[in-house]
Image (cartoon, rainbow, N blue to C red; front, side, top):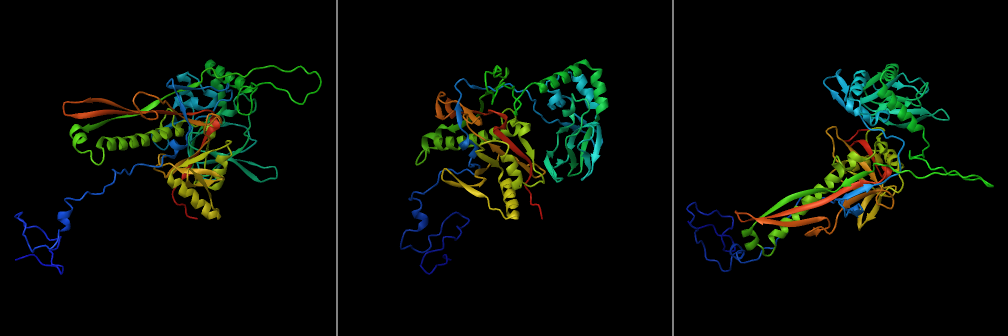
Length: 484
């Protein structure tokens, strides 16, 4: 039986071929079928597409410094005020929580202390204490009887204002310490009150017990004495060694003399790298290069992948990435969880000439929800012809490389850029052998015995924060929907 005939007199193109593989001639066509015509036609095609390509706003907005020697040294004035880090804990149950002794050196008074045995003994003296939501942990003006380390939870530091109102001074979260700032004071008092906003756990250390241990441990006593002496040296408001100057005097006053002291151990950044070996079969390169060069397309997508990883490293690398290298003094936590306009203002106020915010798209959406609740409309900024959202005139760029934790929290980064403004700079080296793009080269390696051509593709880069306040982070940003 012949195939069914459509009104135009041609058989349906969707008709199945017989199982024998012999095609029935069917009715005679009066014109060339589209199926036959496609065999001679040239297909219009796109280049190979890649979903993982992102805007890479961080790479585009960083000023890049050409590091000819492969190493970049950041010279600074001598810093006298020791920065505060965060301790970490070892938890083996609800009541078996201990601070890891070596991380106690993140506390300013113990920075650089090397007596591991003494650190272990201090660690063993902390006691676990659970705190309920709303509980006041310390009161301003009361004697410091204990030092605390926050295991987990959110605590608000506050005080009473000039006219009796309550003023919030900041948020204390996991890994932060309280009380060690009283070292060297005869009768230390709490300068602000601390209240638990959520249920949490702290480690408490009796102050008299600590002082008694210091008295019988000469190395620890010397460490504390050195810390107190350093904190009492003249310094400017940023904690740098002071330069004596005089102003407003009249007559023939004898002027004070001094000099600007430098840090004798400045940090150096070596260029990091991302590498891969691109493999292309010679048969593909020889026979399938029209209309698109197969090697060129393979190389283009490989470079896109390398640039994506480069931006990930600039954000997440433990040696130089922003999330791990921004000073702890430039980190603040959200007051209530979601990123509010107040939180963004606080982050913005911590530095001059902030050039950009970086945030995960979910964090940006969470910020917009808080603006909607207040009836606020964030502005926009024109960046290279692109309209991007902005807050107080500072553009907010999406960056999917900033992680979202399992607790649905993320971070928002604020950056000042450029060497001239003592900001954040990208580091690379141009003019390298066989350079394909700035600081990226493609080097032919060999053709192996399987007729595979191998190309080594390498990108060199790093990132430097010139002064601590060049970058800051808003942490513990809740990105999930919070009902009113």
